[in-house]
Image 1 (cartoon, helix red, strand yellow):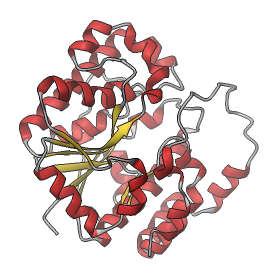
Image 2: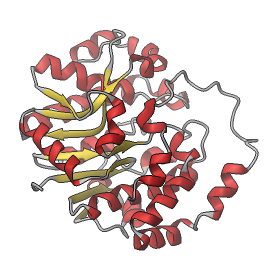
Image 3: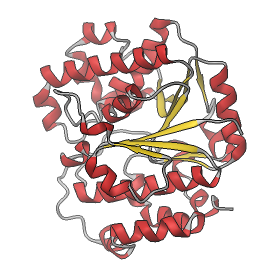
Amino acid sequence: MRDLKFVHSFSTRPLLIDCYGIDGMVRMLSQVWYFSLSVAYLKKLGAKIVLHTDSLGKALLGHLPYDEIRTTLDDWPDGINPRFWAAGKFVALLNESAPCIHIDGDVFIKRESLLELIADKLDSADMLVQSSDPACMYKMEEPLFAKAAQFCSEHGIVADGQDSLNTGLLGFRDDATRLRLCENYLEVVRHFSANFAEDLDSGQMLTPDLLAEQKMVAGFSDMMGWRVDKLLDNCHQAATIGYQHVFTVDKINNMPSCMATLKAVDPDIYETTARLCGGELPWRAWLTAPDEETPDTPTPPRPDNITFTSDYKDFQLCHT
């Protein structure tokens, strides 16, 4: 296996705002469980992984066997609305060096052969992403970004009905590409944070990074002439090659499966995470309790998370 450096980022700021009608503490503890499983898989393969977080994040994830934990995200850039949850990723990447591969905390890399595939693809590209993402994912966010259409176009964001790029995995071969993409993202989110704060503060169901990050990566890469490769040409490949990305409310609904898998993959990490998070019983009670406090807000039209994110029997088989 070649010497790949993986990067996690965990900013607790987005957990302090009302988001999707899910309690902030629930979202925070779910992150701890998923990050724990993501780290457990990589360390089982002998991979190197670095965490960029803030002081609270270090308290929550400091028990995990990272090769290095850096409190980079204590130095949060001024003027960025916490609705832009991917900001922590780009601040972390600004403070890294290429080659490096950032993976979200709900991404699982399960096989050594997948590490080789990632290395091979990154060797021949300027940037490596997870996959395409269907255009329907960002429909809810289009009206907000239409308010600054010219600015968005100049930064590679055009809501043109074409697919975006899923950056659950985002790798860079060289520092010039890494720095320029990070700078462009931060310009975008500062602009929207300064000029559309009311929209962002009241947009409980908004996920503005679907355009600011994922559509931007696609469009800005084209503008710059960068070669971008995808780990998955077809999302149905994921289980076959040992890759999994769990996102949206599926993360919450499938917490028991995440816990059971972590217990099988690394019992020691499971035990320390369970002690930190209060074990499994609070989750089972929360998942079965009547949902009386969630506001009557229609769920945004999203696809059914495609095969590789909703095939949860893979959770039960992934430790074999």
